[in-house]
Image (cartoon, rainbow, N blue to C red; front, side, top):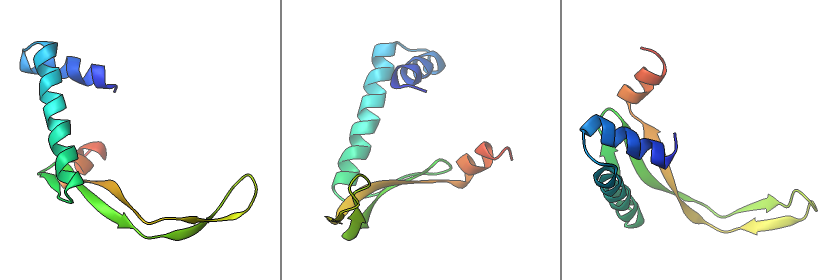
Amino acid sequence: MTREEIIAKMAEDAETTKVSARAALDSFLSSVTKTLKKGGRVSLVGFGTFSVSKRGARTGRNPQTGATINIPARKVAKFKAGKGLSDTVNGK
């Protein structure tokens, strides 16, 4: 599903305009992004949890040349599906 398809579905389900649905989606995404940037977590019971994980520095290999390269440590966004979402996807 694309962003525009999500907005259209939200507008249809909530019986509102696409403009309102877009504003709601933008607000949600902005809130999640700001919380993760601060190192926090966003938990939606039954759906899942967004969090930040630290990935340590490591050595990698350039696939074209085979040369060894150093990959610096960084933070990555992570999503763990909740039981409700997992059960729905698995047909339970």
